Image 1: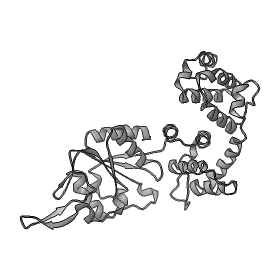
Image 2: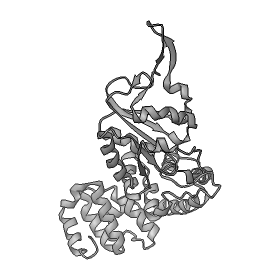
Image 3: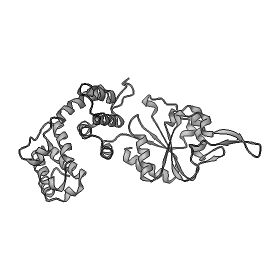
Image 4: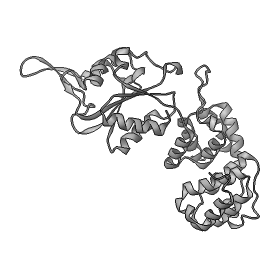
Length: 327
């Protein structure tokens, strides 16, 4: 299930107060989708890392009540009122006794004398057994208490998130050119670093810090692995030699119009960020000089960055001239 569909499914489960378990390989963004879904619903997200708990942490500490009987003081991290999402992250990485302690909380919404408020929904997430991450097999009695959703990376969804998150354009341009490298995880390999939505966000942050040229490639390899880093480094060199976007906008008929797919993808990404109604005549003229598929990419990037550009005469004329490829 792609992230945008997962988000809608989570909204349904939260509204129904149906516990749900989100499965997926490392680094695909399970925690982020949980947080985004809670934000869309205007609900607080209480993130509890089950792997860090002991069984007694959930039930709390005993005390002697006025009736001279033993009672349990629930831990302060469990909610006592209001509404929200109780997120048990890495639940299947927790020891079996901790998972067992979650049985009653998930099914009966209670732990001993503690009662989960009616406004709170339970959401859990974890890596799959085949990912060779730290996991414990989930007991069938606990598994049967959840709706299970499988999470898979999806480039268009990630690109939409990347725009909101301020991911650097050279990273998004590269992944448009090499979409298979958005997530390339093979649990049979012993790679310490591998490409994932999370690790590409690391690359963006590293580039934003302007590392020394002598260590930049090593930093990228440390985030996404050697193979992806070699390809990204080659792309980055092309990106940095692109025609100046201001020069293209000033004279779109004379600026170089690359034919190399990597370079064309990069220039389309860069120019799309300059889309405004006033720049559309220049962008449309330049798009007409590119190979058809990259002209379409440039125009789509322009509209994605500024939807008002679709109402311009320049865009309408370009779309009319390219109706057979712009669908």
